[in-house]
Amino acid sequence: MKVLVACEESQTVCKTFREHGHEAWSCDIQECSGGHPEWHICGDVLPLINGDCTFTTMDGHTHTHTGRWDLIIAHPPCTYLTAAGAVRLYAKDHAIKDQDRLAKGFEAARFFREFLNCNCERVAIENPTPMKIFGLPDYDQVVEPWMFGDPWTKRTCLWLKGLPQLEATNPVKPIGYWVGAHGHDKARNGFSKCFRDQKRRSKAFEGMANAMLQWTT
Image (cartoon, rainbow, N blue to C red; front, side, top):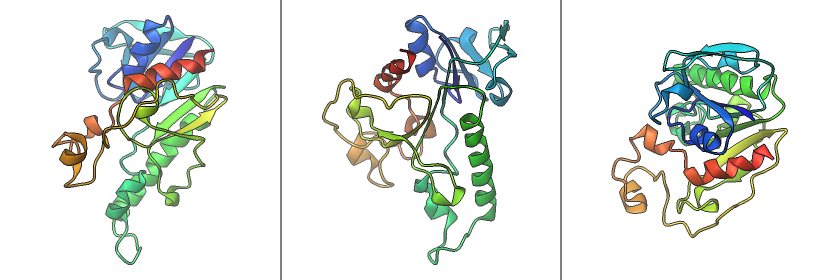
């Protein structure tokens, strides 16, 4: 199966699919930290999502993909979309207090919809719960890392196009919240900088990446 993993610099999902014999490519505007530059496209993913494309990986090799992708898994940026950021957008009287942030939110929502509307029959998009103001469609499933063997609570929404919901593979008892509230993250997670560290907050868990292999059958 030919798989495009969008907005992933960690390569956690990409490597999982590669390990199981699939032709998976990660793409992000950041260079990869997963150790496989030969599988990573550093640049804008939108020119690739409809297939029939040519791209260059970080090792300098050029590749041509003919036809549509068999599967696209996308992790679009959530900074301006997530409901957790409402306090930065709204004043206490519910008025918009940051017009620049609002504009960035609508741009992020437009980027998000590109994946839903792309020329691919099977698409999965992962994000936190979004704010209603940006008009994103209802998500199809909510998953947590503890459902797949990683003992953490981190509410993750999935928008699924042509795909079934994920089945829990190894439910375990969660030991805390992966992303804690400000001032409480160390007590809940054991990570004193988790609240400020965006990469740690958005960590892709290996258990969930393995569960995504359900979409290849």
